[in-house]
Length: 117
Image 1 (cartoon, rainbow, N blue to C red):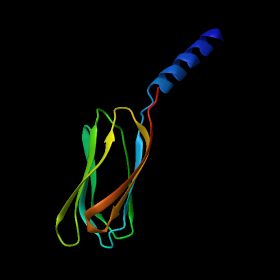
Image 2 (image 1 turned 90 degrees about the horizontal axis):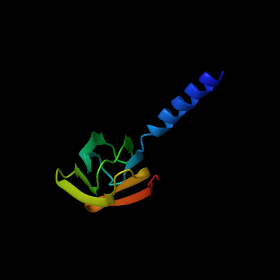
Image 3 (image 1 turned 180 degrees about the horizontal axis):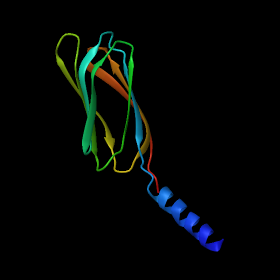
Image 4 (image 1 turned 60 degrees about the vertical axis):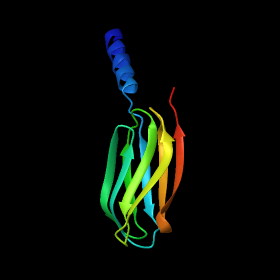
């Protein structure tokens, strides 16, 4: 019985030590038109979507490794490339990030991050 308890305790420790801290991201398109070729660059990687319809949302989860600015780009309805620099991200931050794409090539970033111990 003692051996079983010990093995269970070790397994629990290993599982809890391997927790991956992530950022749940929601991008909302309030530009009034579809956006195309959306790309979000963050320290060490990027993600994107081919199209986000007007009024639609896109969800993605990522892990921050390293530090640096979040950068967002997309092609608007007028076929012009929009590039926006967002908040600074730090290694290991976790939480939620809401990005609202606004008319005239603007965006609102609402980060709700914590840094684990």
